[in-house]
Image (cartoon, rainbow, N blue to C red; front, top):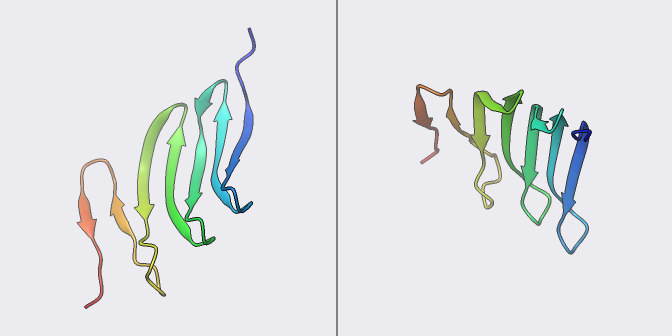
Length: 82
């Protein structure tokens, strides 16, 4: 059996991209991105051979200037504007 290697893309009903992820030998690999149904970036995750690696960022839907929530396995921080 051959494991999937390539890019997988999922769409909302309105044809906006929902998720774009890369697989290598059946495991998540590389930068994965997700979007809100209005086309704004929702999140980014970096994967190496099936394990989440480094930065994970997510954005709120209603912000004009997205400010990410970030964590790097050990450290969590929330950036926001008042």
